[in-house]
Length: 198
Image (tube, rainbow, N blue to C red; front, side, top):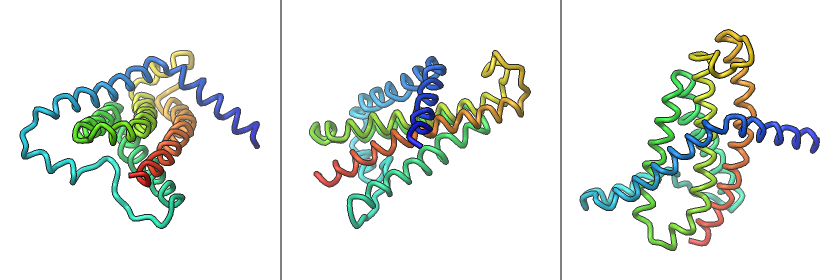
């Protein structure tokens, strides 16, 4: 069992590096959007100040204990934020996944600009891990969208049609979402512990 998991993990990272240019591009887009939005948010008029208390990239739920908190945060981030919001729209058009990734980064940038420095430092590990999870989810959506739009560009070494490329991309996304799950799980653990400290 552990050998199978290790093999799947190694294959996921091999594929991650194979798509290195796309990964680097999406990381650059995501984290630079956070920084740029955080910088320019300080110039917004005071009427926007109440906005951050009403909008958050993470919903507020009531939990009985730390385990249910971790599970609740993880399931929401994995199923809703990563899959439904970021990846799935990319199947229709790959650009949607990138656009929604940018929108999420802009929201994070606006919100961290409102945080005191200590709260920002506490939130930073969650921001990085969760952000990387959404980057990989966006990559999955982009790969799915490009597979049927430009199959010859996505799989240069293989002569596959649109349907074959899409099936290939679906298998590839299994590896991507394994990485997304790992990243978002650790992000959920850190976020839950951070919220308990606050």
